[in-house]
Length: 543
Image (cartoon, rainbow, N blue to C red; front, side, top):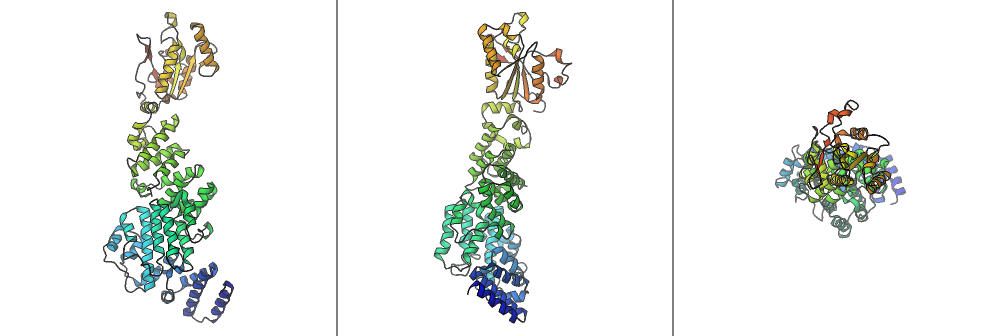
């Protein structure tokens, strides 16, 4: 029968229907006919009639269906039929309780072998209850990763035999388990076998595609392979009927296009479950959406154990890479700290932490040194490069301002016979760079060149011309040294033997950090530069 003929038939039946019983029978015709002709309007009309029917009317209608999967997705069927099943089953039935609110006590009762489908249920409703229970167990396992939940989904009292109506849902359930465990190849093979090895009803391919779309984020970057394995096209966003389905249908759009507007349309749907947000985050390309997903994912962690439930298997490297691509490195370090707690001693996560810290700018690191995040990173920081490690041991001090004239005279007064040499400058710069000073500023008095040899004076002029050093136009460089220091006093040391007593009145804030910020030096008997303290010594009160 064509769609047009079906619609005419239903219209005639509507005119003939005289009571609720007959109207319920028309609903059955709409459901079966709509599913057979793929006419969603007629199909939905039948579902609506059944939803509005009384419990006895629905119970009678169900006798006409050999396979209740015809009624739509698991969620739709559960919403429609739960009141019928609940009116028949005992109130303390562990399966019903588990479906409503998955708990370990009910799971263990089912696993004990004492539970079976209540005898009062019709065969079709009994099979339906077992299917609900299987999917509820999978969703609970996805959310909390307790082995008992997966065992419920696979328990003999729950699984349908291969000859039972609707048994095609169980291989699909196993395919979802494969996806969670990172086995995309095996998951695709299972889905293909459903249509090859079994006789499935006409509506089954669409149901498979709908369920598979819901869990498609678990396929990650290989979602196209997963969708190609389906017997019908994956569901689009406009066909999705609940938050989980919308999050699954939107996955391809957001991963492909990486547009903020697309993400905002389904943001609330994505955050409904932690595993969905995780799957999005590890699959999304670098960019603004990835940064937002990282923030959303971090917000889902209310307790340390929450992140342990994420589907890590086969996705650790993708997670680490996604964190490294984040523009917000503090966010990246927070996510990696969460991962270190969830999967301790994982070398991939530890290595990613090191790379993110090494890539951090000084100001970014200064913001985390000493706070809770830094403590949560733990022993990982001991594997940093020597310069970065020394900078952190100093408490985040990353700038050095050099009183250049004072340095090249070895800290001695030139009027007392001090001899200038650029050798000390080069030696100091080399040592400071190795110690993790990422910005080195050097100021010289205007008269410095007069105390150098011709070749060194030429070298000084060249350094000034290339912007590597600064020479004041006249007089002393002390004010410039002090002003450069006061731009970021808690992140700066000043290389000088001068105490700047004469400048305390001009720069009163200098006393707040001085002389802790002064890095003195001396020239030893080998004519080599030595420091007044170790270059990794913390000296500020906040460090």
